[in-house]
Image 1 (spheres, rainbow, N blue to C red):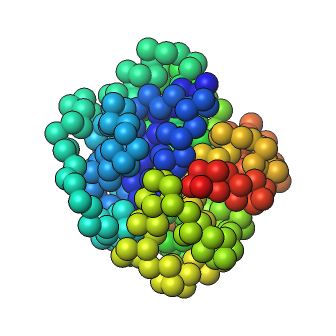
Image 2: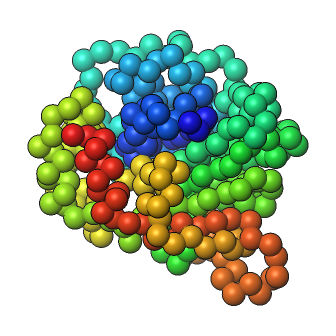
Length: 315
Ligand code: BDR
Ligand code: CA
């Protein structure tokens, strides 16, 4: 059983990843969920996170509110409401309210440090959002990184194909300084599931149509957040390679490493200045710097396995 803390900016695909983690009771013990500014503002991120936990009867998992903005924003429009919906969770009108007073009083960064340091070597951090909370924890406490068992990050890119700017992936683009601080200072094994890894693993829309016919609680939740404000037709136009849920794909790699058919250990950093390339991950593919690898990149996913895990989750 892996003890995990999930750091999120919930987000439709963060919601899918949380849902998967909760469903895998034998594999994952979700110790906490920490929230950070990203797809939407921190207030909505916390509310959306509680919404997911409430839907699946897991409100006993503590939710912590974290950083409300990046170190040095790349642009004024850092959120991704156009993609995830105005509230970040598909703009669904829910029948019940969310009681946000149950959000923990302790700051997410303090909670990360406390929880990791009290169980050295036991916690895996699943970082599915801009890395502001994680970078702050590393900066504040020198033991935090070495006390982590490992880190799984959804973020960065390997070919300079951006999903937000021309060349940068959203999570790294929103807070490039944080991403660079984490890559250079993590002090624990880091696995990255990058943007291009996800787009090349996109699934056909026919498969999504099939998922829409399922009627479990999880499938109903998926349908709502996929179709209410976003609309499948609109999503098809936005996701021109096919359907993907990057945060879900990332946690699948943690759950079952054989979902990834090729890993590469490399040294990588984040461009902090480029006029067109700020936030892009730059990889020393040829070992020119002779530096030790600081990340392991999941290069390719087995889409048959990805599909089967999604079916198992939603059927
Ligand atoms: C990442 O950006 C966000 O919009 C998603 O939640 C995911 O974490 C993909 O680039
Ligand atoms: Ca996310």
